[in-house]
Length: 190
Length: 73
Image (cartoon, rainbow over all chains, first blue to last red; front, side, top):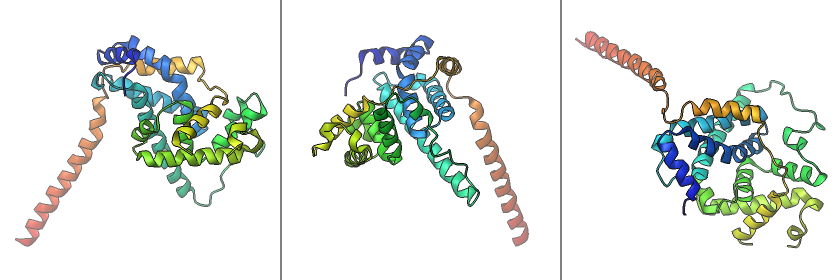
């Protein structure tokens, strides 16, 4: 896969320790990574922390980047590992909490993501994505929103391309089920 | 259904998702913190803890060996 000429320039700049190159990468990826973290964690504070950690790692590893590094893949690999670590910590916390009562948000309260929806269709879509199991949601986000190839996503997540294709098909099928009447017409004619 | 078709349909529907962006104040704060580390590499203090733990383990191991020798001789 070829590297975008802009990215090559940014990589060279990062390798030389130039803050201007870092600023360019930050401007290009901050929204994409933040949206990914928001949709994976559904928490604004956590999404900000993970975004900061991702860019801290980029800054700290700037000089070790290869000249042909694909920054999107590099950044989303870091982002994925941070989300996995957070997921594990969540699981441990839940296990340790045992029977302690957990404060759940009120049923009719909108999440920060749902609050961004302008229409019923957007709300239904955001809820349908949120309802996907994290492994399917992640693939759907990387392929659907980020426009990555399944093989590239397989590299980022460290799984076989077959598994990505399977998750992709299941994500699509579950989204269609969740969306019901809100699904695009082309999705319903199967 | 091919995976290309799945990818295409997901891309089609994902375009309808509401855009999300971090607020400018938080973005500036994050950029400023990370920018300060560009090219500096991770802090060497991250090695302090493993080195200390290693030293403690090593000293316990040495002490155990000496004690064993003392008991056996």
